[in-house]
Length: 244
Image (tube, rainbow, N blue to C red):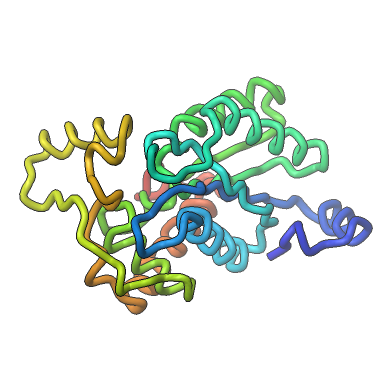
């Protein structure tokens, strides 16, 4: 793995020109994750996922874009970018990578609210760069067997696996959808996209109280293996069972 922020210019330029490099841009958020997880949770998780994928495959790792589109969490704490702002940041970064002779980019997303900013960004950049740049946007939770949550079992387990900044004594059950119909879940999901606190009063989607470090390690390993395989598939052109 080549971590951009630790490199020095002369060495970095040699590394880039020595062979065709592939870059990874992780994107996260700064927003509430209940009383037991830090506001950096999405950023922390996607950074670790990206580091491990880059380490296994020798990709170039960019510093994480730590801010995302999180307005839906108000009045809980959030530091948010507008959809178009995040999209423009990513477009500028990708064009800058192309100018530095890097022609393949994976954008790895760690926050649900960022999805509209990365949707079709690959097509837009192909048009802007006249097909000189290949960009592949992914959201990491599509590559695990567990259902996605927010500060629930999955995210809390992942944070226990990668961070000491978790206060399990403050963990409380939030919105649990186990007994809901698919239609009910879809309806409350739409509400959460507009106002997360209206969907779940304590800002948690799921139940973090049973989360463990061991579960987090297993989920993280699954994500890294599956998403890493998907990235390699994009480079080789072979089909994969995984989806974006």
